[in-house]
Amino acid sequence: MANYTAADVKKLRELTGAGMMDCKKALDEADGNVDKAVEALRIKGQKGVAKREGRSAENGAVVSLIADDNSTGVIVELKCETDFVAKGEKFQSVANALAAHVAKTTPADLEALLASEIEPGKTVQAYVDEANANLGEKIVLDRFAQFNDGFVFAYMHRTMPDLPPQIGVLVELDKADAETAKGIAQHIAAFAPKYLSREDVPAEVVEAERRVAEETTRAEGKPEAALPKIVEGRVNGFFKEATLLGQPYALDNKKSVEKVLAEAGVTLKRFSRIKVGI
Image 1 (cartoon, rainbow, N blue to C red):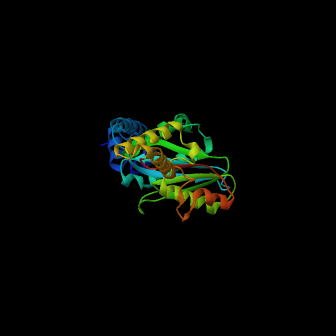
Image 2 (cartoon, one colour):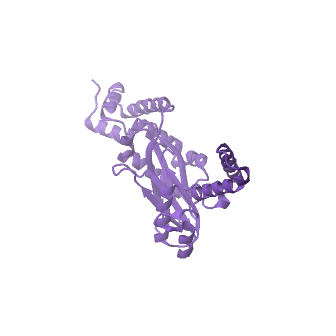
Image 3 (tube, rainbow, N blue to C red):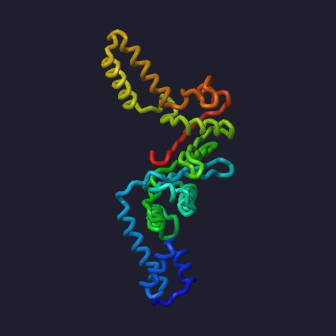
């Protein structure tokens, strides 16, 4: 029998995050040598990562980090396979560490984020792969948002009380107004607008909606003379649903979001909404 102590098992668990039985088995195979056991567990973990590549990760969490003065903020989506892992302390610790790293380094995009070093000699991609190995599930980092040019506010929404937030919204106003920022962020969480205003909708998207509206209207047998008016009405309906400023405000549907912002004397510069897996 290999010569090792309970303290060796504890140390190995702290170094690798592996389960107790896996640590004991690794120490048995390494004749009690902790360093060799660490190496064996990491090799085993990386093999597990490769096996999990084809599996689906549709659970997870959205975490946020906002500066004390609301001058900067980030939201990060980290995905996993099961809600059991999503609500675990280790998974959420990884997600929060990633959010802190984004806030500190301001990566240009996901590729830059994954290639950056979160620890000396360890990239974010390697850090996520390590979490993959330690948690025994496919772990995926593929979305984040960061604002740093105004008053930044984050709203996190739990779809289930026993799970971490599944929806995160980041908004940026041109001046400080926490109450308005919160209300707008809650609205965005509920109504999921894709664009801020009509001007932000790409021309090709508008044209596609117009074609669909025209084809649908013709298929319904509407009079040719009425087509332009009906099509325009349906395109306007798309704008109302897809753009934030034109939507009826969630907390007062007699007003548009645009009017609420105007009455508060603030401008919404941009927003980002992330829902786990969507």
